[in-house]
Length: 109
Image 1 (cartoon, rainbow, N blue to C red):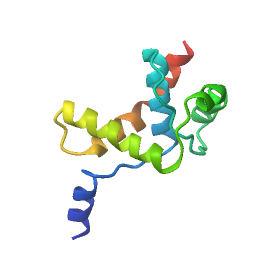
Image 2: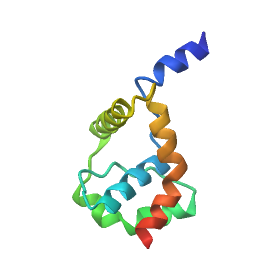
Image 3: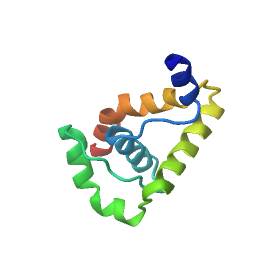
């Protein structure tokens, strides 16, 4: 029963953490289109923490906060999932999580 619940929930909700937030921010910097910056989440990862510190000023200009940020995050994932015909949001979320540090390094170049 729990596995069925998890599969169904992954179609509706996704984990939002420090790496995901940093990856979305980095993608916007790379593309040159700052739409909104999702709130930073505290991280123990040095690369993520350094990036968050470096982008603090930008984050304030485009900041989205609280429940609105999570709502926009889910809308973003749904949009990408629909365009790519992905079965659940967690695929997008895990890509952001996995490639966060690589994206940050690309911004730094």
